[in-house]
Image (cartoon, rainbow, N blue to C red):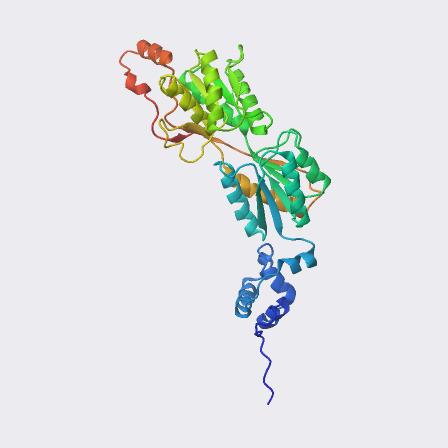
Length: 376
């Protein structure tokens, strides 16, 4: 009597999608859709369960190379970051990879710094590996890498930073609104002599936050004399300290500083201590980004909170659209920031005295720095 042929392979050959389909009792195309996170929703749950069970029984493994030959797509996406050590780009990466995984993509991540030649060489390597698209967190306001990607017809999306002109879709925070929130808060406390530590102006974040700061000062009638501003060479604590030292040396009358990011603000903390001053008693300081642990410094930092993880998710979704519809017009998604008030801001000392003297019975304690975090 002939032995009935088993659907389970003997292990000498790789399991095929056809074998999975035969064991599950479905068509091969159903197996393809059921095992692809991007198309799984097109298959009824009962059929998905059958396919998954059959694949597990047979030990089936998805072959990305074979799939790429069939579909012309690798399901690979490149992500370029200038620096993973910062507390902005790490959550951007987490959000992007989380969303990409749900769409059936894998990510190839490169930490490429700011050298354009290095970036282009890395992207050239990704193109050779047939990536379906790119997410760039590295761009300057006029970036040659963007021109390179457009020339290569490679679907690409920008995140956190954008170009001066909209050539590609991008996801950014509302930098101008963030500065308006910071200046509004300080003005409400009674500050008028407010200075700004700007980020590098070749990046949209530095340029737009500086522009937003100047607009916010003008909205309160505080721009008749140009508000003091020092441009930091990069977004580091050391650069923030250097800029703050120059600001305080040349503008001894300032009572508050708005920094373009939290590291720059922490550099300002260092200089304030070195000069024998206290924050916020002598000078209030506001940061930007709300990176982890700034609520643990002394005093806890008042800052503008952005949502880098959501930026990453949105960038992945925009890239999916760019891959599936290459002719789609580029668009910019702008996420709203939020002011987080902590202990590094309070009323300026002269304002406290004049207010307390004009209101008998009001104690100085009422003007103490805010210690409880609140969002505005």
